[in-house]
Amino acid sequence: MNILILTGSFGMGHNSSAVAIKQELIKQYNDSKCFIVDINEYMFPALHSIIYKGFNVVAHKYHHIYNSVCKISENQTHTPLSSIFMKKIDNLLIEYSPNIIISTLPMSSKLISQYKVQSNCKLPLITCVTDVSVHGSWVNQKTDVYFVASQISKDKLIEKGVHKEDIYVTGIPVKEDFIKINNNLSESNIKNILVMGGGLGIIPLKNSLYKDLNRMENVKVTIITGKNKKIFNELNGKYSNIEVIDFCNNVHEYMQNSDIIISKPGGITLFEAIYSQIPMFVICPFLEQEIENANFIEKHGIGKVIWNKEDNLYEQI
Image: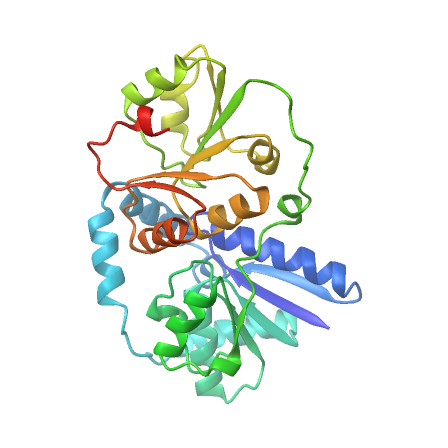
């Protein structure tokens, strides 16, 4: 059986879930072939890097624009695919000959759904929603099955008209490294604080916060800046008790060896923290879907959310 997993690099979460799904499918069905394709790169080979850079800038510096677009597009109706897009999806399906398609990105779910409408294609489409919140763009008429983070997510899909029989509460898929939890408790008196900003490296940049963390007794601080070279260069070597590292492939080790994580509440990070059994400390979430994730964190006691910018972060930590 050929399984085609469609994703995109708007942040790292969608890709991370795609990899996690592939890992589990290969483990369960080792005679299957799983292919991961960045749908944005496939559809726009000459422009995809520009699109991603533009997204990063808007999400990081102009989040009010991002949130406005999210609200405007919440109830956007389906638009027919152009002949160019239809041909590209034809080529995609010919190239990979999938028996089933799994999407971890609203864009790919929408494209495949519309392709199925216009071509009368019967290929099963599974959409894996990678946030607790469920934006309207995730909902498409030709999606056969939805995998969602929680019962809250399922209820929201039902409110949007999806049949409850088509929704499965699975949690958000995380890579197998996060599932292999190391439960060996350290006897050290040193507390480890991990600061992360996801693939975009969006972390709090108040120098006063890092000065305070740096002077905490019996505390070691690690900051992972992801692909944000600017923040890495600004913080690296600046504080004696703070280690700064850029993009790495062993985040699971840092998370499982930490006592608390200061991070933006992305859907993937949230579930990685749950599997790693590490409480989250969230500072003033600002992206629409991450505000809902933060509410989920508070409701279920997964961590602490600071909503007021004027709060003393040092005292709260």
